[in-house]
Length: 192
Image 1 (cartoon, one colour):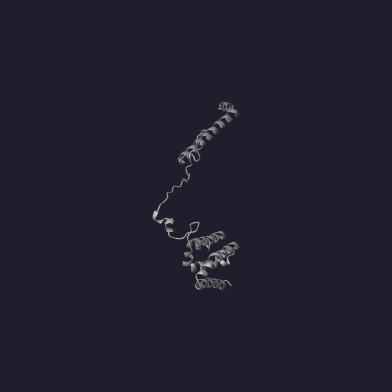
Image 2 (cartoon, rainbow, N blue to C red):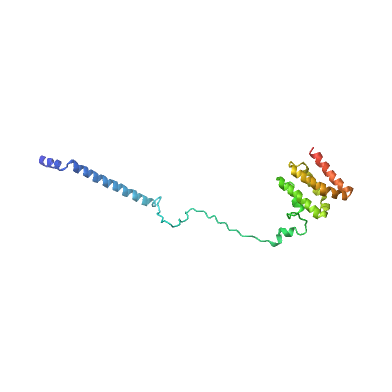
């Protein structure tokens, strides 16, 4: 038996043992790779699959793309037209009524306040009857602008009072000028 053992030892040279170990190691690595592939298939496929694109082709939109198109249609209501609402009223060059202009005199922008005063002057020059009908409400609203922080607005108000409102109040008699002076007095008392 000892002869057999020596023969077996001689046949198992270090090169053979090394090559057998490498072959065994390769089988183990291949086996691990196959196990990983099987696990991925069980989980539901590849997580990130790279798609090869051909040159010159357009890319398809992403799956989570948002549609940003907006569709709108106009609603036409002929009986509620703004032009028909202003048909019988006196309007300024910009197409604004006296009520709208009086509202704009309290606007936060000085240019809008000045334009409103100019529009009021235009209406009163074209339609003097408007001043006679709405004299008190106009004076009540305009007295707020006497203490305006903007110099241009105050100057425009002065020109409006001087050129249009005071001459009309003088023509209206004693009663018209009393209304103006009463409104100015109330303004001065409240802002003193």
